[in-house]
Structure formats: C-alpha cells, structure tokens
Image (cartoon, rainbow, N blue to C red; front, side):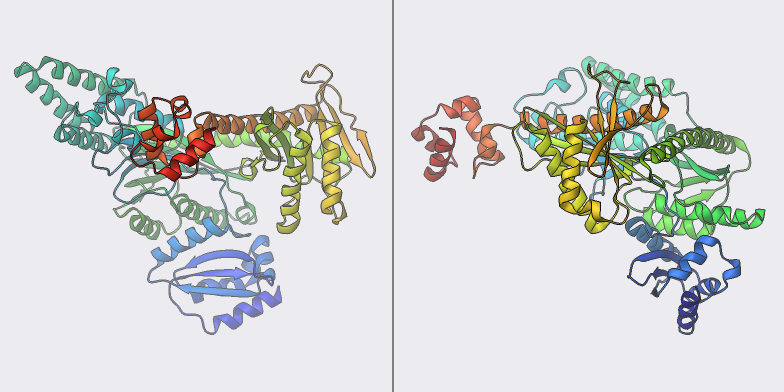
Length: 620
C-alpha cells in the first residue's frame, strides 16, 4: 500500500485545486477506479490517509501505480465525464449498478410525413423522443393508444413511399393513410403536433382541440369527419379513465428510493410519463463493501448519499434523457451539482427534490415499500442459489462456483443453426453474461460439430482474454460432454492452474424432466454425479438448462423468420431493393421472374444486358 500512497503524495505536489476527473491504474495499466472532484488536490489527499479508508479502497490504493488527471471547466462537467467513463469502462473498484438494458422510447420521426414508432439506442437528430419507458409493454400500450387517437403512420419509409393503396390499418381506423392522400398534409401535420402535445403531458388541451374540431365538423355537416373525431376523443378518454395510477402532482418525472437492508442495497425507480405511472424497475449495486465497512451511522449515510449520486449520474449517462423532475427518498450527494449536470445533458432545467409531505411524499413512500419488498425477495432467491452452488461445488470437488455456463444448439435439419450460452452464479441467472452464436461451419444436421465450433470459439477467447466460468455445462449427456472434453484438451484448457469443471446433463429415457443424469469429467473418465431425484440442485440445473434451450430456440426462430422473408432475388449480385421491386411488379412474383426469358429480363428499365444474364444464370 505504501507504494500507492507514495505515488499519490508525489502527484499531489503538482496537482491543481480545480474540478476534474482522476483515473487510477495498476502496474499492467488496467483501470482500477474513476472519480470526480470539485478540488482535485483536496480529494486525492484523502487517499493518502489509510486510517480513514474502507478495506476495499485501501486495497485499491495498494494496487495503484499510475494516476491520470483530466481538468474540467466545472464540477458539473466533471460529474458527467465521470459517469460516462464508469459506464463505458466499468472500472474494477467503482460502484456499478446492474442495468444493462437499453430502454425503449417512443419517437416521432422528422421525415416530411412523420411516423411514430418505438426506439432503442442512440437518438437521432431532429426526431422527437418521449420516454424512456421501463418496459416494452408500456411502449406498445402507448403506441396502441396513439394509433387509435391520432392515426399516425407506423410503416417504414420505404413501405410508405411505395404504397399504391391504403393498408389494413386505414380500414380499421388506426392510420389516416397519408401515403395515398387520404388526409391532407396540413391535417396530418396537425395530428402530429397534437400527438406530440399529448405525449408531452398536455392531455386536456389536446382533448379540447379535438372537441372543437368535432363540433366544427358537425356544424359544417361533415358527419363522417365528426364521427372519426368522436372516436379519437373516446380513445383518449378510455385510457385516461382506465388509469388507476394517475398523479395530479406529476407529469414527466422519475422517482427513486434507495434502501439498505441486511447488508444489501436496492434502488426502486418509478417512471411517470404524461401524468401516468409508466412502470417501475429495481436496481442493485454490484459492490457493497464501501457502504458496510463503517458502523457509524453518519459515515454510512454519507457513503449511501455518494452511492445515490453515482447511481443517478450513471442512470442518465448514455441514451436516457432526464425528465424535468427527479424525486428521491434521500438527498444524493452534491444534489445541486448533479441537477446542473443533468440539465446540461437534457438541454433543459432539471430539478432534484426530496419531498417531505403531500402526494409526492406518498409516491416516494410507495417506492420505498417496493424497494424493501424487492430486496427481501432477492435475498431469499439468492440464498437458495448460493446454497445449491455450494452443494454443486462440493460434488465437483472444487472450492467454489462463481459461474456456470450452459450451452445448447438449435436448428431444423441443419438450417439456420445457432447456439446459446447462458450463465448462472450464486446470485441466480447472470443475464449480462448471456451470448448467442451463429454457427459458421455446418449447414447439415450435426449437433456435435456445431457444439465443437461454439465451444472452441468460447474457450479460445476465454483463454486469451480471461473470464472463463467455474463450470462448463453442456446439454446432451455423454456425447456432447465428450465433445467438450476433446475441445478442452485441444485448446489447452485442462492445463491452466485451476481448470473449469466439465459437466454434461442428459435427459431421461423418455426425455422426462426430473429423470436427468449428470456426468462429470474426472481425469480420463466420465463419472455420473449422484444427485437425488427430488434434489434442489437438480432442479436448479434443470432451470439453467431450460433457460439455455429457451434462449437458443428464440434466436433460431428469429433467424428462421428473417430467412423466410427473403427471396431468391435477394442473393443475386447487383439486385437491390429498387430493381427487385421493378422485377416483381413487372412479372407479378418471384416465380414469374424465374419463368422470364433473357429477352424479357432485358426489357425491364434499369436491367442491363449483363445484369439480365446474371439473373437468368442464377435462376436457371
């Protein structure tokens, strides 16, 4: 530790007293920690006083061999940079929150005739976004309402530009068919503005506008138009009346409640959009030691406050846009600076409040209750997984199990072959470690060859980059386990200091659940593991195996579905979407193109003689 402290003391001699971000690296150059400071010199001085540091931070200082400093114009900008670096680089000693999901938003695009759709990921310029929403269900429910109430198009731009008649959505009154001029550009633009206003929380104003439009249409004896407006008003009214979680105090707001219970931490988030409860999500911190080292209540409260600040900064780093109001059950550290930083991110004023009474306080209290309930359930579930992982480790004669990786293959007669990797550990299923593989070497039915390819790719990468599991588990019994053993020998996996255990799980004689047999590779033999029929460990391994099967078959169906939508024309060099459309429009179908002569192909505009020859040769 003295080497790390000596390094910091030397660096302190030249450090500025300005805001900035610091990074600590070990002797290999790997990132240990990212932090921000209002005063870099004062902040880093704290690390040279080991008696005031937690065990985890003392260990970090012990490993530190390099310090990298970046000065920033303000503390708010330092906070933003810190959050982005933590989110991107995931340093070893930072407080990380399991939040790998990229949430869906609702987007109204910026095309000449805008469309409404769901969106995940980075935002595009000029489009208008609403959200993010915590669940896909909340987004699709919103889109369903928007189709009924505002009848905006949802089709892709290529589909929109090439339509010659209205689609089914026009017939069922879910689209106004701007593609074929069933609505004027001005009227459609008005619907777009009303939709944006509605999603922005101006529900009453939009309803009043539609009410006025309906009355004007009725007075003008445009009864069909008036009836359509009436239906749109009813659609808005139905969702408003059906909502049992309306808040008069909130329009667009995020609510966060952090709780500490039994040595574990959870953050419960509630999301309000357009005055409605749009869903919730529970987050759990990955590192807890820093909060649990001090028994002093004031010191612990300070640590939790810092954790809360980091959580909020990380939560909004990336694609999420902060709402105008954020409510918390306890003030995060440097709440004013955090609000300033989030305002920079959102390009609008963001307030952070900790209410003490009224409806906002009631909502915070409800979030706290949810956090406690979620933490209680998670603790109970983790206890079961942890206990069975300990039992499994004992059977395999290994010290402990950090992760079990299970593999499964999915294909139909060798077509669209894929594989899945799912991972589980003492805390349960580790979904952030899941992986999918496209099989590259086989397109004929050979599950053993496919498994060999996947395991070779995974183990080779793991030996090179690290991150191997404690146990490799393959679905398929002795046959697939033998493949795993062969790959382990060929790649040198068995020669590492503590090689992973190699296990296969085979279904019973009639493929019944509960009758599975497990085999373990020990030296040169495969031994059956003695697990009772009704053992909780067997149930846990079945759950992991079934999850691998689910993950594989879901990916396979996705690949197969995409494959079925393709035609032979998609594989012909020189044929893009435009030429493909021209061919099908002229000949009526792919079969018609196949039956065309070389002369007929050459007669199509845009199809040159060489390209016509290519098409003819490919199809014949």
